[in-house]
Length: 586
Ligand code: OXD
Ligand code: MN
Image 1 (cartoon, rainbow, N blue to C red):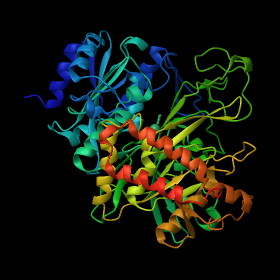
Image 2: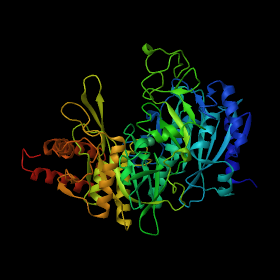
Image 3: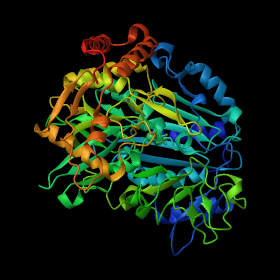
Image 4: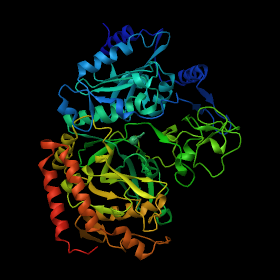
């Protein structure tokens, strides 16, 4: 009798017709064979054996360098369950469209069977997925990003309790590229892309889109959040989870080297992208990092912005679409100020300073989490870590103060649901478009976002000790267009204030938008931020917030009747609080 997994593998093989099927064990010997296969295929080169041992550079198809939200679909039977923020296809239509693309798509290739665990192997909060793929690059990445191979098979046994994910490179044509999720069946089909988020199905597809649906059904949370531990001088570690839209420095915050290390404050990394949380026996929300590695953006990463990851990625790392130096080392913009001479760019062409960026803007490193010097001793704790704070943020040049705290869980859900980030037009310095990105989950929520807000509200009612909710903005600018806050390791000063709020002794004042530190409440020793700058960083401009309030009103209309009444109430109350502020006051 074959197992449910074997039956599924057989049925996919009948459709995709690979020359060979290989079940991945996760062994070292297998990893070496996969690397050899990648090199033979011609898009991967080994890097300098002395300075980057066991590292490789992979060049993807130039048309396939990022997640493609336009062709990412949530395929629920009822369109309303996908909601207004997702692309939708009926499940039958999606299968009718994609089946012919998968038909014979693996001919002459190997189909790899990758059983994997998302989360620590021994954690009851972890879940199993199986990815079938014809890409050796996917196998090599999944080996870093998840607990893959026999460990997952052993945990699965004969059970059918796994999320199947079918992936094929197809012909890599953008016209025949689809990333389809069937949340009701907990199934993923992805074709036509070999790039990270489209092809490593454990990450965004399973751990966020499908998992958010499961979490809604089962009473837990799957969030686009880093997880960190802030150690205080007493040695006590307080855990926080933080959601930011892409390009707001999540990985850097998760691995921050604290500017207050001499005073005994230090940051430990649990995860940099995704958090799965459920209510623990102690009444706290307990978080695990479902991933085992970091798939981070390379450009801008350097010894100042993230020394921990720079140390981590000197071995066993896959670089994707970076430049290559004559020393056979990876290079990207922002790594240092001196682009080495005679590099090859990310497409393997000779590079000169007039030929544009050497590394692709979304070039990546895939590195085992355990190699990061800041990795927490509890990063694989089967019980997860208790979360005391949620941190939300975005880039707001003028509006949001450096930090503010929600007055209640419900108010925090409103803040999270209305989160936004701005793009800046570099040439003019003008503030560009504001993009709302609730909970930083806009591209990753596997169901109707209005119901997802409802789920957050419901969780708040069920968690005996809910995390405090904060909003931060590291990106506020002064009239001269310069950042007011130094950021990076200095952000620990803001985390310290949060810790003191959690412990109940930090100074703060109430404003219409929430609770803001008094200008002297943050520890600023050793930092040349003046009191005036601090006041500016913490100021709340009622006129600007009144405009923001109106914009949120328009955004909320998009959810129609399904938007929870609690959020309408919070919205109305914010309007009332703003109207009560005397005009002209700041
Ligand atoms: C990521 C993203 O790649 O959020 O993590 O885009
Ligand atoms: Mn992400």
